[in-house]
Image (cartoon, rainbow, N blue to C red; front, side, top):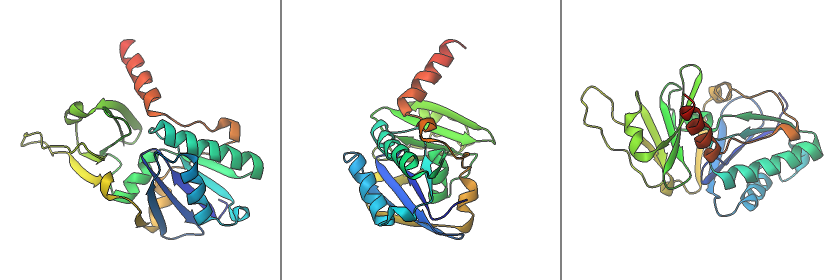
Length: 218
């Protein structure tokens, strides 16, 4: 593992980024970026690495999520990997958010980037993923946590089932900062280092299409 490293995720309307200089806790910050695209990525990286020559590795959230956000971070990552020969490893974006909000791996984690669809996944231990509409989220079995900017889950009224839990409201997260525990990195399940031509995000609309196609062919 080559350090210092940049960890970054743009799968939601917020860009989350941090600098890793060694073992131990890491501080992350989040800024709204959905309307700024690559300018937001430029700004975040410049703040964390005023001298790009210091960066040795890049850890990149691959989604699923926002088309605009993921396109911006992956375009920047491909350039850095190609020009500076950085090690770049990807991770499922929800694994970082789970660390931020202490969400168990076996619980459903929901995030969204458009008006209707949520992207839900859990690890039991293999990853299970769904593209799901808001009103169908109540049908997911087990604990459900939702990171949302408008839709607030409501109790389903069933006494034997745990009601969905809202873990964060994006409207209240501008310029948020967190400190993650020592064990955070082991939970990301980083991929092997990838070359620039192998860096491809998982867009939310593609997940929806693939799952719908799979269901049709049962």
